[in-house]
Image (tube, rainbow, N blue to C red; front, side, top):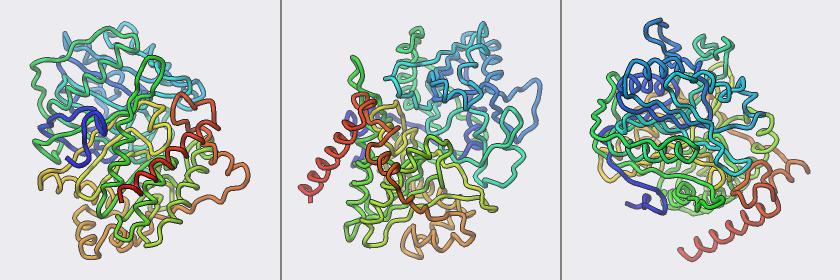
Length: 486
């Protein structure tokens, strides 16, 4: 394999009998609801946030005998199926963060008291860091991983309709359109993610949980399959802290993937702020025969804090890429609905040619490369069927912004000679709009220069000057390596 190397760019590689890419929450929650119905021995849920009031089927009929609220559903499963272990592990968020979520997940502890469902809040990260992994494992046979948490303000369809009455939070208020990408996999890869979840549970103070042996949980009915009999890789970020060595497989895979792209890099992400990643992309854009680079992100960040910090640093990221784009192979877009409402992009996805697909919890910022915990699944193509699945995923993601099917994007891409040309042809309604980087004043330049709010490790989390020096030392080292290679 060119991209995936255990102990460097990934943690483990394991077989997957089936896998499905789930674009947006309608597909994710439908798959999750069906998968939970198959659980018999163990359900492990690891997340950044969690609201037990979240409905998994807001577009369906609510039945009293078949709840779709995740908290009630898990309680009833635990009560009705003897021997089923249900464990939920969520980051113990700062109160300022929790306040924006109606003080969930902190309030969720009370929901599960004396119910048979184990619930823990996990603060075993450096001060200021967060647990950002999003993983669900069922019987060590089925697993879901990617960008999405189970919260009441997330559900949406790939159509991202204006004024969709189903897009309501538990308080019955409307929430904005939102984009996520998850992957569901069956087979030994699920058991490997189960090992990760059980380790996290134990380190957070929970009891030792045994792996599930001999279960044969079926693939849920009604859920399509995108690829069969393949290999998937798990990549992680864990901070180096106290006695923990940490790991940076996601950061290593990101740079390896950028360096190895031949024709195109398609990236959807909430944040683009890492100068290390910016320089790696800039180097490829400066090559006469380098790949096209298409970035899809938010028009502006959702929170005021991120607007003050991440958006200003993103401006530097984009300006750097624009300065390197001497051959016109860069596009940076924000998506909008038909009536012009900005769509929240929370996905963390990378498609490299038709050779690598990454479905991740990790942003392209400093935190996700070394300060927070992250997890992703990656598929590297070694067979034609895998290449087709990756290409279809990439075309489907681009097409869903444009109101086009994957095969329409493929036809345009092949006819016009590239992804950018295809988007230009198909973007007739302007759902994808160029992101114009902010012009920074003195305050914005200060924020971006020191990457305020975006540490790269525990060692610099409260030392902005050290952070800046370390970041740009790494940029210089990586630049020298690229020069030596060629």
